[in-house]
Length: 323
Image (tube, rainbow, N blue to C red; front, side, top):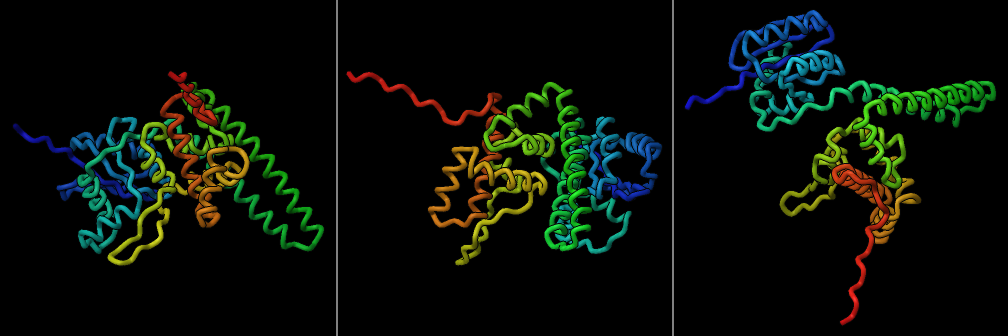
């Protein structure tokens, strides 16, 4: 029986140009990173019977071509730069230019064993909108830092006015984002499930919905890893290092970490008990808070997977009458 071979291509993304290479072939091509260029790219790939395409994330310049290729039913794998760099280091490929990078990405694409489903395309504009809201929050924090160190009353008035304006804009943008999400009944239902978990405020619920489309479809371990809250061992020989978190989605981790503070002190009885137990065991506040953030995400994942709202306590079984 003949063995099927999936033809793979790699694309190195630039602001103005796309460099394309096919794995196992010396043929390469360069096209404009425009709508017209994407259409020409699709035809070029179809003529060469390419089925799987790898693209390295490049500050957002790759988003339009990724969306177009997925609309045309190509399997697209989005690599993080460190993944491609690690592959090049392993194979001792030291030279670097756009054409070499495209060929390297094609090699990485062919080496991938597990293909994850593409994210819901409806979430991409929501993610950009949420990032803008996060950036407004960061701007408010910077202005508050300036206000704290400022002694001039006139300048203080300027900072306060800008803070108030940004805070108003943040509320308006969050309201608009929620309205856009609720236009999709399935996303609105998932958002309500996430929001039902005590300690998960509405901004945090939106962050989980938008930044973790896998929620409810994966187990607790991968969920914690995607959230950047999974503890990893650091042991070697006789050395037993402290476990630490690493990787994951930074903005999602930040949202959960911030939510865990109020949740573990006030709103969620399970997280309050977990935090108290960890502190009593000698854990530092930051470690206990990270554990609470991880527990919050695991709980949200379980609630979405179950499809029923969160309840504070599982009802106890009725005692059987004595015989």
